[in-house]
Length: 126
Image (cartoon, rainbow, N blue to C red; front, top):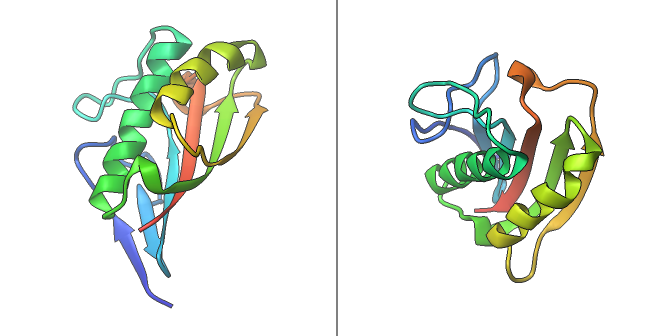
């Protein structure tokens, strides 16, 4: 098995003992991203649309650093603080996957790091 950690300054630094992503056997596994600005580390306090957009920008940066892209995503998991945000999150999410969207799960959770309202993780082909 081949395995390589992915790191980029275009996405927020890990806030714990994990990699932004890991490339293994032709796939890149992106750690969950929250709506943190990669330059400041500050969490977006805007709407769920704005937070989702920031999260997906972060994921896109990790994928690019791994030699992949949003077009190669095969599986996504969305964690929402409040399932009432689902429709608004989904509208922004759809803009990032306009054709042949990946498999996905969306769940409500009790709490997210740094009190974010959304966290998303992704798996893509390299």
